[in-house]
Image (cartoon, rainbow, N blue to C red; front, top):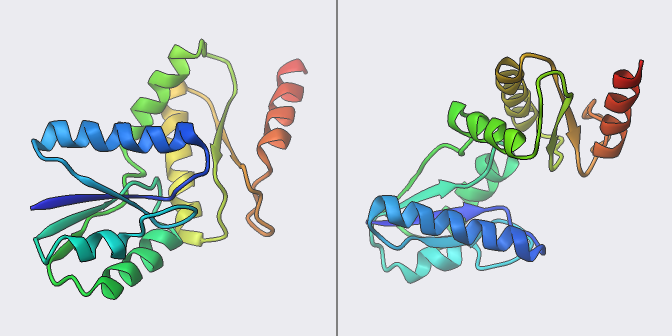
Length: 178
């Protein structure tokens, strides 16, 4: 059995390292070296990696925080294009209680204190499923921090209803000053 971790992809070297670290942590838990592929920005693409696995049973894990377009459209398209006959696709990593708890841990490490406003910054999407998952994550994080968490998009999408990250942070600062 092989595990294939599929991430979005980024040009940021820190983001690429983070995916490598996640794959290494996953390998440590599973006692197997997994593979990594990307649905966008850089390669290899999932179909390229699947073709190298010689029909070995494979579990594909979308390392994405919502069930948006990449999970519902791109991943199945890549699996079909590979011709690999033995692929099981898991759900996306989020939303989940474990990830939300990890977000709280990161906030605490960064010096967050009760009463500080939190902005959940997502990449940005026009996909309704992904927006719903982001709203679920924000609600779960709100329950942990004890106050409403705002949602913002790094790449603001027209019609999403969510502000850009700079606008959301500016709003939070104005609200804190009043």
